[in-house]
Image (cartoon, rainbow, N blue to C red; front, side, top):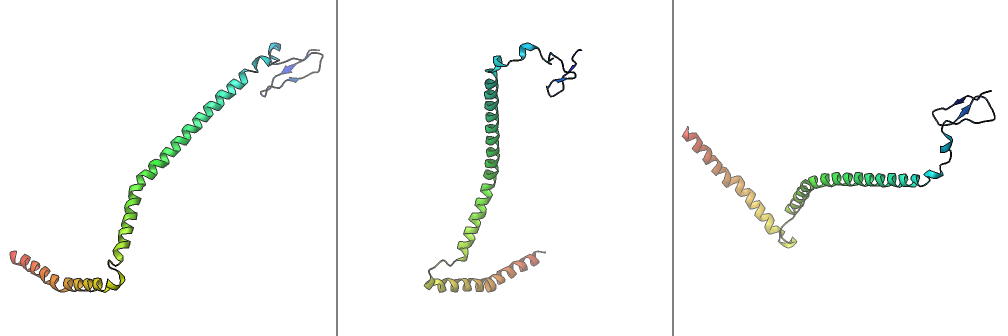
Length: 133
């Protein structure tokens, strides 16, 4: 009887009928891979080297995009924080606590002047505009 050999896709050999000889899907010269034991580490080292270089490039690209995004927003954040700082110091009194009353009196006089004297000047300008028509 003759042995029928099938070679499935996974590389294993299937012998349909048992016999005294074994058939293979590859030539008998390739049965031992002792000739290729130096090739595998070389390919593995090349693969790992290329993989590490690619991952390092990806890491650099991610850090660059994050840095650019932070750099674009930094000027706006700085302006906002400076505005908050100026507003905070503007609300505080300019003089020491015993002399704060002088500043309060000054603000009161300034508000009173705006309500009385400035109103007259604004009315005078509106009269000038009416006369020119």
